[in-house]
Every structure is written in structure tokens, then in C-alpha cells.
Length: 109
Image (cartoon, rainbow, N blue to C red; front, side, top):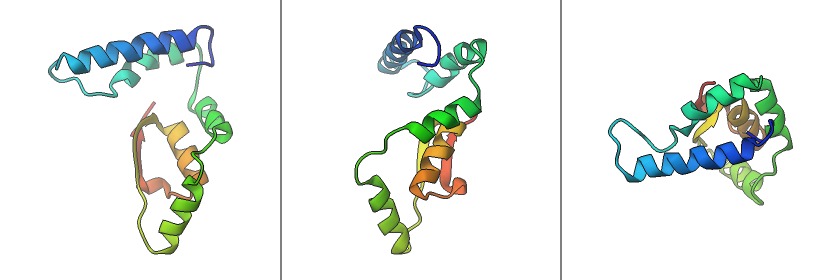
């Protein structure tokens, strides 16, 4: 959302709206459905999966996360990531951690 003017402010409002709908127990609404609200803004500003993938290349990782995932994989663990993040971002970020793409569940944009 920060890729377009005032996108961070729009995100804060939509995120708060998501929180309110979740707390109200609105039927057929799940936490994280915010992405459906965000998509029209991204599309309007021409933000693509490629833009999201580029952001994931530059994103900082939680300290120790690469080492943890690497050690788990070395020990034969299957590592998965389940996220509401859009695919372009999720696949690139988890790829940096060594998590196989087929082990990532994310949101299609």
C-alpha cells in the first residue's frame, strides 16, 4: 500500500475496519479478509505481483529466521507457511528462507 500516495493511511483505515468486523462477529467474515478490500486500490494504482515480489526482495527478515528454517530443513522437517499475504510477496519472501513454494499457502492477487 505504501507504493502509492497515502496508501499507508488507506491501509490503516481498512485494517481497523477489518478489526471492527471481526470483533463484531459479522457472519461470513474472517480476519484477513482485508486483502479483498485492498485489491481495488492496488489495481487502480497499477500495483502488480511483480511489484510485491520486488518488495519482498528488500524486506528484512526476522533475526534468526533463516537459521531456524535452515536447521529445521536439515533435520528433515517439512516447513510450511500459511499467510494471507499476496502470492507475489509470500513466495519471494519464503523462497529467501528456503521454504518450497508448494509448502506456501497464500492469497492470489
